Image 1 (cartoon, rainbow, N blue to C red):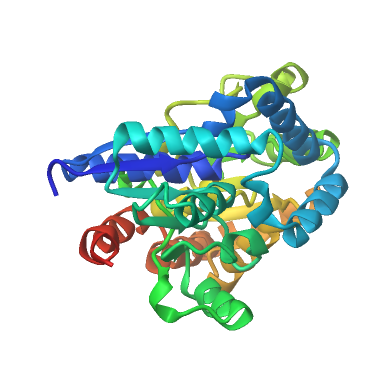
Image 2: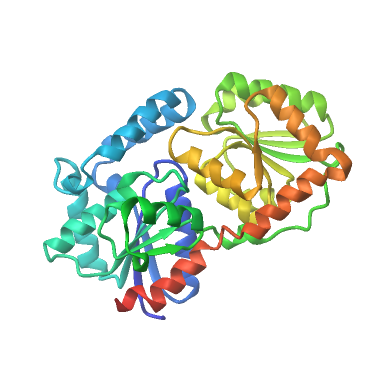
Length: 363
């Protein structure tokens, strides 16, 4: 499909939308497409955008109950009307300008708001390009994703497809269980051996309440003093740098996540979509110690359904789960890792690109 042009509309509320977008950029570019990923919310109203992003981050780290309320409200809102609402109409016009300038052959939306704006622009006769929605969460999928008129909707798993098909009475021709788009670097596994107390390598995502994070890290370091632990802590670096040592790396973020995942034995953290599906691709079992109300509860449900991870509600529970998973030559770790790989959930970029090239462009 050399010479074709694709536009990806994404947004940085959480990491899942952009992570999916970057994987799609990688896949389409490898096929000779010219492709761009654009955040029209940031382009149009950068100050308002930053305020809303900070609100989301505050909810994630400090007030999950507030996010539960917000999430519930988004499920009942009239998203079709948002395309022409004050402020958001500017975003709709930004999309129209991009389409006019780029003249894409296809548009992919990793955030539902943009699909509703494209619905409006198509009804106005201003956009005739085929477009699709790339859903970035599993099982607990909010209504806005499903009530768009996009010709095709890509879902991350077959369970979600069955659920939304029944709930919203959608045509099977519009739905695809594609998997989540994950960059191909995450599939480069290093042939890990089963962990022992002296070879254990952990990645810890510090997103749970701060007191819980500190409790977990103290217990891990005390119980497994020879383990290598990488703590990804974002803006919490100042509060967590006290844990840094020769074997405990504390960093705000890393550009080396695929390699880090490939040589680690467990990811301990929350069930955000991007991290979870990257773990699937890497065969990296997850111990979930925190799930944001709403979409992340659905991601966790899929992980447990696949037998590819476990939950740990307290620090004591975390240490008990680690002990069990590492017992008898780490049989539990082997079982979870095998389930991760067998589920094959990180294939979305390839499957979506195939569907675009063989079906969506010709509908």
